[in-house]
Length: 424
Image 1 (cartoon, one colour):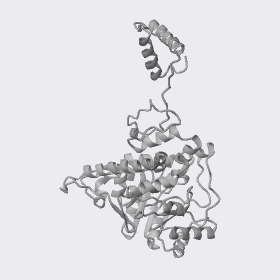
Image 2 (image 1 turned 90 degrees about the vertical axis):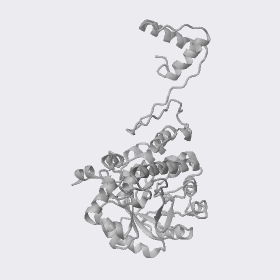
Image 3 (image 1 turned 135 degrees about the horizontal axis):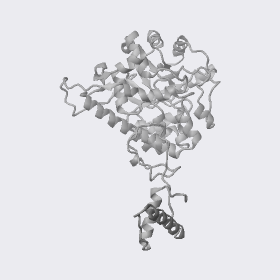
Image 4 (image 1 turned 90 degrees about the horizontal axis):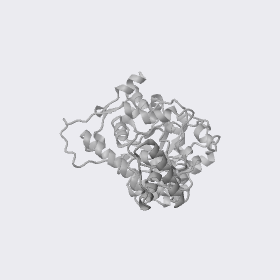
């Protein structure tokens, strides 16, 4: 077959050319069709008609929302106007970005079972609207207060290393500015292309940033990071505790030559040690990477102001539980955690409905990492669209559920029996 014959764009071009030169098209039989196609192909090459084969992407099992990639060109970003949800953003960036960079952002560990479980768990939770409350949903508020600061939405950009892969020049500065323009929270990773001070300098005067830090094996480096965060005006520290000196075996990333930061973190996984570190900074420390109800309870008992439930996006232990499963375990075994401290969570959040479900399960702040990094490919405008898409979905979900404020969402709005039946 002549290259490009499989493309409908090719057919359209040569048919149009045939009409221009007066070529009659006869598809009355398969023989006529075959001969006509070859004749048209000859015309196309004779007149040097350019054609572009449609981009064919592996959609990785993401939901089909009617995304049309026929006009896409490999290595070129589609216009933001063609992006309607976070899945669109991922596929667009997959088509645009280099294989190594995409693999690093996208990868999970080993067979990526936890990565996929994070995405699939939402299918097992049903949302239940309530008309009996009699609320007028004309005005809906998505505002949420986290550690004393009010934000426009209850979701935030979670720490994600090498966020500059989607914009090497501006890197995390786009995320700072986009979040600030939307009145939202950004928590930059310590593995950023920009310094702690550079990112702080890019924020709006009334904008709040938190900072993610690893418990480095080098204690001097750790204390210096604390001091820099304080001096630069950050308001809290997310201390990631779930990968002691090794990261998960991320086959997809390794196959494509993506970076590996193993060997630099402390091997001390003690929550008591993390609590001791609180004496080294005035900023509240939030333990990140908690995946058991026992550890969540201990965080509350040790006096932390917040805890961050996370399986690291499925990038560490494959087959680790999802945030939903951990939250249900906390409700069953240590429900006081939700009243003694703020609970944050992440993992597979792609829609406003996912955010509503986590809010109903007692989460105050919802982190989103990969999708925010994908949005960075379009700069500040892309980051703002990331927030606006999710805010619209969350607002719509709240109105349909019959709630006017995120604080009204509780377990009566969700049916989690399918998940519980798999757990217990």
